[in-house]
Length: 343
Length: 292
Image: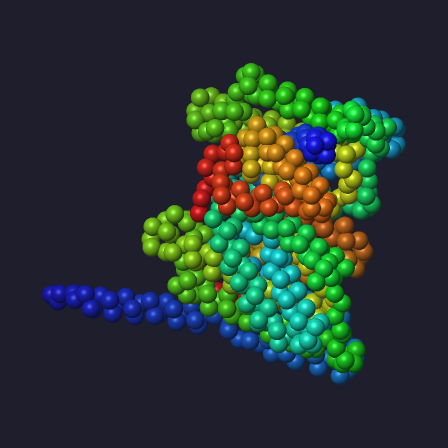
């Protein structure tokens, strides 16, 4: 009879784990997101055969929301802290880059990472304050944040107050004018999804998910929950701020009632809930669906009030009947198609 | 000196209405642990009931107040049965209910906007623009009447909670749901009734607000932050705290508005909300909340 050495057991376990990991890796449809990226990169070629600006706009708009929703997901999905005030960082990024663009003409696409960092620093500072409370109190504080920033931006003469600042449109012809922003948003979206994946599969991401399950247990297990949470807040603010930077130049003006309307932060939250909070593909699926819904409602019904009504209804229905979201619910029943398994 | 007295009176007058707006919210949170973000949008519904009653039939808001109260109470029962009863078993109850009420607020806003457009409205009975004068100081009649009505309603609520058997059951459930249930309190019924009372109070507050503040469907977002600051400063779930906070903050806001301009007066509420969360998250009379 052979005696088992500790080393043997560890080795056997490692082999087993590697086997599991590689079988997951084999089932992973990595080609799908990569293929999607290739298609999106080639999409503007449509412009050679006609004017497909509407298609370009829709993809760009969706990509913008993918950046924001994936960013929100890092805090709201992984850590479980629901923020209804993330459009504050959208505004910070938009105003920072927009003002520099207006004064010095530096393209916001170049400024986007810096704008993201500024938003992240603001997020860090705000997170230090608001992450002291959790649950309902945190959600309330995030709503109040939007109100405070809205009043400040509307009364800050330097950034144009409530009227905002208009920005110079680029000098490209109508057919090509959207392309720089298009590529900026598509690349940012891919980056946001990739970073979400990396975070989810890191020790940091594990800590975040532990916080969302049970913060007290996570803390007693030795996780520095405070630092983790605030960092997650800052990272999510980074992405939202980056999206805001380019969005301002794309629209050619920055104004409080573009950035600081509640519908924008609702959309971020709703996309994650509908797609699946805490999953990687969830925010992407959610963004595509919500943008499609919005276009449908505005095109067929024409009124933004109906859009608000419909958005609210979708949110209620998805919360009540499949709170895990599309990706989460499918995964729970083992019916998630391989192409959507990005986790 | 006259200035200061004047501002104090205006602040207190508005405080009375905010107190009524916030007390329903506080009651619902206390018993059900629901942060009802849809509360202000339901106040808006009450305001529209009073507005149309006045506009179409010339009914005074004071008379349509009970009507709005009953209608909203019925809506409350409906919402509870349709939405919140089934959520009671949810694992992430507090998070779920906040998001649900948020979505509900959007549904109400969208429905009101579709039906009545986003025009600014205000009910204008004769007393809304009239005032009493005592020497140099004027007391706007509308706000005075609204303040009196709202204090009367809050007093009734307080007496009901303190002396009636059912009120005691509500308070017991607020303090400890399990213990109340063990002692034979029908917590489901308590939940239903207190939710309905809370929403009915929103209707009453709506009728009063209709002639004090101008309103349009999207304005409830501003109200929600104001009401939340009252509830948080008062201590989540404490009705007395909410009322007191309403008076304190309205007076402070009135002074801020006088010295720094009207724009910054609403900022008082939002900053107060932040400072309270930072310095004393349990508020004036609340229990200690979950601290992170």
